[in-house]
Structures are given as structure tokens and as C-alpha cells.
Length: 196
Image 1 (cartoon, rainbow, N blue to C red):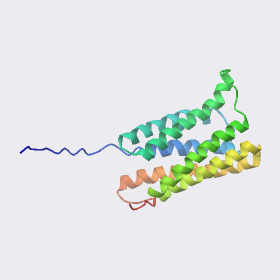
Image 2 (cartoon, rainbow, N blue to C red):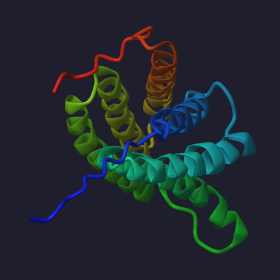
Image 3 (cartoon, helix red, strand yellow):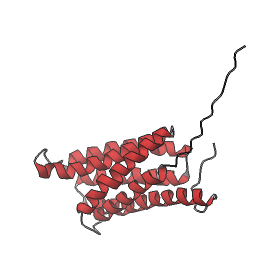
Image 4 (cartoon, one colour):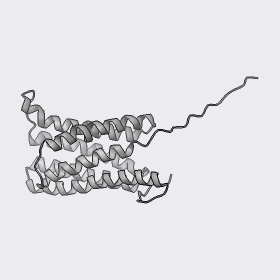
């Protein structure tokens, strides 16, 4: 008879989701303040896009991978790459490396991100109401921005800007709710977690 030993590994690493949600939320609010016409599109938004929306979310995605969370890994690494890519579409033409993307190209870019986001939105029905709100409003945001680019309608882009501010604030709320609920050991801010 052979003796067996069972080793149980307990994951004591922190929850990376608030970092990813914060990166997404802050950058989304700032860009959509510009889309709404409330502030200009400046280097401040581009810097946020590269470092907070982009790199911080990439870090969160890698940390979600360590926690064996496929949804978090894909969401944060994909949207982190989205922000870096979006800033690249603004910067690369100014360097002479590539031609500027026209409205139709950007419309398709946003449409494909909207389709991906719709799939992720479906996944949120297994997680929480808070994430349903974030991803649901994100799908609407991508749809409005794509329509604005395809049609050249500035009013639709402005409406998208206000809707995007709501989406970003939803992500910031979800970030803070996760942090504060964990710190206080009780639900201070409701997330509507789905019972499995």
C-alpha cells in the first residue's frame, strides 16, 4: 500500500479586478468628456489611455490569469490593449508611420469591439449586476460611437460621450464597491452578485 500526500495551495493574492475596473473607468470617463464636447482631446487623455487604461489593465489581466479567471484575464488584457491601440491610431499618423484612419475604418473598429463586448456582456449574467451594467452600457457606447463614425453625425457622438461617462462611472463604482466590501467584510456598496 502506497502513502499519498495531498497538498492544498491557498491563493492569498489580492483581487486584481478593482485595478482593471479603475483603469477602464477613469479612462472611459475622460475620453467621453471629450466626446461629449466638455473638454478637448489632449495629451492628458492619451497618457491615461496608454498607462492607466492600457498598461494598468494589462497588469490586472495577467494577475487575473494567475487567479485562473478566464473572464477577467480576457476582459482586462483585451481592453487594456484596446486603449493602447486607440491612442496609437491618434499618434502614428502624426509620426508619418501610418495613414490616419478614416471614419469608416474607425466605424468597423468600434463595431468589432462592440460585438466582442456583447459576448462579454452575456458572460456577466453569471457574475454580478454591477458588471452587467458596465458591459451593457459599454455595448451601447460602442454602437453609438460606430454609428457616429459611419454617419459622420456629431450629435450621436456627443450622446455617446454622455452615455460613455455613465459607463465609466459604473466601472469606478464597481471598483470601489469591491475594495470597500472586502476591507469592511460586508456589503457596503451592493454589487448584485449572482448566486451560483
